[in-house]
Length: 406
Image 1 (cartoon, rainbow, N blue to C red):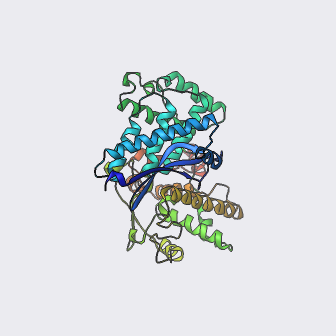
Image 2: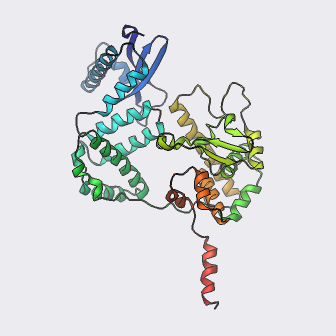
Image 3: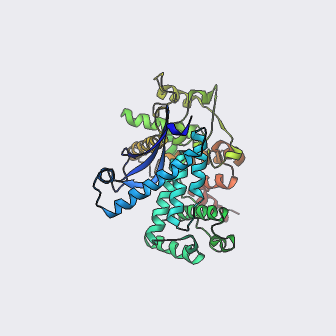
């Protein structure tokens, strides 16, 4: 493919506007017969997009955006010109490498460019998480630069967040993402490791509150047959997640018939497909009889759909699949909340509770933590321990009463 046949344009993705009604501007590269789109850092409303592409643009801020888009187009065309023959793989290698090798110290710019690289890799959930963290940090201090990130800044940001009723887990999440950006800047030799702010500052972390259901309330769910068919379907999926070693909704929707091998389910966790690339191991769990019955009842009957369950289809983009998964998880949680109230279960019964309940039931049955770790798909026993409830409250009372039984 020769570079003369490659065209570069921009495209406004109006399918998912943000809370401000602005849509992502994407870079559109066409090389017959293939086409690829890459996210940029720009977001515009449909009206702003129309103005930018109009003949008489008067808005000064939009003129700046148009100039930046034109500069990006020129840069991309120069990259393409240097690729003979052209290939999308070669282009992405150069384009993404340039996106992370940034001259400058603006925290916002570093975040935005890293977010672009995540979206190109189709790591949509991570891109959304980094966007949220960036907005919080920039909301705290505008024009923030890498050299501004000191132990004192981290402490004051933590206090600022807590004063606004943010949880410690939220603060910890945002600061871990900031730490990743700082580490990237150090690797690129933009800032010195000598001034690493996280040497003196410890990111807050909290142990999850109790999420596993007591045996009595779990029994209610396992025996319940809702009259409402949507509630029954949601309960089926919840029980399936519990029975299949606490599998996540994101993994459920991506299962394919090939993942089932007789009485076993083999799959790679979607969440860790990038973070554990050097040690990517499949999760292998047994399929109990009831789980197989649910699979048979809920499986996809469309022969043209490659997925086990009728939630995703192969034509969806990574971003669309991400939102489909979020909608699926929310639908289960909403239906399970109705069931919880009907059964007078005091504790929340969401997707996370299925995973934590599986782990804790295994612990209560004296199953070794190494086995639990393996079936949860964890790489660390410390992570598994966070999933395991402490002893039930009634057991603590029973043991306390034993103190006088000498």
